[in-house]
Image (cartoon, rainbow, N blue to C red; front, side):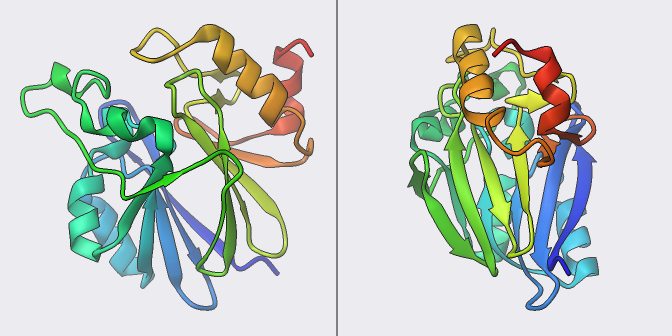
Length: 210
């Protein structure tokens, strides 16, 4: 039986998916893309009884990092992201938060590389670098000993993919990332995106030429 449990919160003005993942045995967990509203996220964490061990970012846009700095202090944990995204998370022009009066930023504590795999909370967490939405966009392939799940951020959506007209984005790169790195994965792999509903790798293949 799978020991990975999940709570999805839809937050921010962009309806961003924030995921709380936790081990049903140890009740240790992580947060992927804390969009905003640290109070709501913390209330869910407390309601579930989860001990948060880390925060993972799929990329640095404001609607995915809004609560990261506050939760980092609150739980005394580190923020993980791909190494190329570290300057995006800290720069209001690059993370788009400069469009708003207060702006937003967060410092990445652990800068990961493509293929890096961490063992945390009883899970195997593998980073797949998928540039295109931003230069350091990534996906996390997470295995709990029973099955894999892919958390794709704004690289791959159900029937679509992320925008590429923001700073450090590239239309060519995002297609290459999807085709060469994601669509080669198992057809039955569940994909949990940064916006919208979940999908499966096999269902997304029809949208892209191999």
